[in-house]
Amino acid sequence: MKHDYLSPLDRLVALGEPAFGHTEWMDYPTRFGLTPEHVPELIRMLLDPRWAQAHETSPAVYSAIHAWRALAQLRAQAAVPALLWVLREAAEDDDWVTEDLSTVFQHIGAPSYAPLVALFMDRSQPERVRGRAASALADVAAAAPELRPDAVRVLTRALDAYTPESPSMHGYIVTALLDLRAVESLPFLRRAYEEDRVDEGYVQWRDVEAELGLVEGPAVSVQEPLLSRHERRERERALQKLAKKLRKRDRR
Image (tube, rainbow, N blue to C red):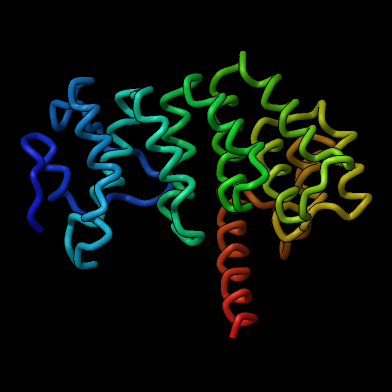
C-alpha cells in the first residue's frame, strides 16, 4: 500500500499484526529510534483513514495499533485528543481498541485522566464509549494513587440509585470499581445489586464479594470459577457483540 511516511515510521506500516491481549509490547522507541519529535507523525498515522481502506491481508491495516502503542511508550500527552477520538469512533466490536486503549492511557498517565472522566460523564455518548472510558479512567487511577479517590467518587456517584443508568452501564461501572478495589464503595455496590440495577452478565455479586475480600477465597464451585479481570472484559465484549446482533435482528 502506498503511503507517505518516512523512516523510521515507514517500518511501522510494514510490521503487520502485533501480539494481541495481555502480552508485552515491543519496545518501539528502542527498536525504531522513536523520540518525542516523532509524536506529530505518529498521531497522523493513528488517525490516517487509509488504513481502513487497505486490503485485510495488508500489514498496513495494523498501522494505527502500532502508532498508539508507540505513543503510549513515549507518554505522548499531545496524543490524548486523538486517542479519545479513536475511543469514541471505534466500532462496538473493535477488540483492539477495547483491549489496548486503557493501557495506552495508563502509560500516558495523569494528563489523560480528566478528559476520560469528561467522556465517561457525557451521557450523550453511547454506552460502549462511556464503558470504555470508565475502564480507562480506572486503569489510569490505579497506576496513579493521587487520582484514585476522585476516580472512586466519580464512579460511585454514577452507580448511585438517583443517577438513571441502564443495568449494562452499571455493569461497566462495577467492573471499573473492582479494578480500583474500591472497598469504600461497598454500600453503594450492595444496594445496586439488591435493587437489581446491575446486569450480572457483566459482574456477579459473588465476584464483587471475592474481589473486595468479603469472603475467604472464591466462594464458587469448580464449575463456576471466579472470573479474572481479563475474563470479565472478555465477557463484556461477548455481551456487546450479542447485543449488536440482537439490534440488527430487531431492525429487520
